[in-house]
Length: 217
Image (cartoon, rainbow, N blue to C red):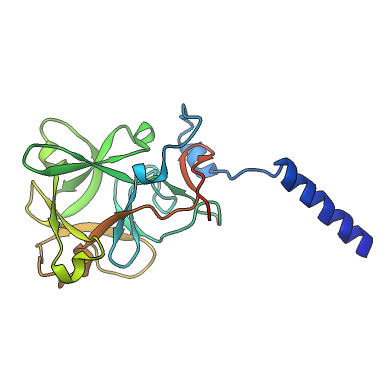
């Protein structure tokens, strides 16, 4: 028995040394979107994750396996580590200047799979992802407002909708998946569900089918 175990260990070590161990896969992403022209993912902090005050991540379709590819909603979801379980992680949002007035639009690195949809204010105080047009562009623009000094040391900010004047907010409730909504801005920081920061969390985040970044542990 000891000889068998020793032989198995030697084989495993040889596989590790030769790089023949199967690489991480993103089966759910590949089924929904196989478009992949990259040979290497961009640097990790190019598309950081919008992070809620409680550490959960703000994600739409093709940003987390917690969200179905056909779901137009945006949610606060757990900070999973890509490749360590059944659910994988993907690149996040990139805020880009949308106008000279200081508003931003949120682009998703996985736009090749989501048809260039942006984070938008939807009617009835809901938030979702939708394709931008001239008619709804104001709904895709958000203004950053610095958090009070007692919170600002963590880099958290408010995001106010240009269209509604309301602030992006994590919806109330329990469970691993909470819908994003808009509520009246509480700029004193009393509603921490309205505070967000941009950070890159995942050790293995996929940028397309079976291709992920390589970050040292």
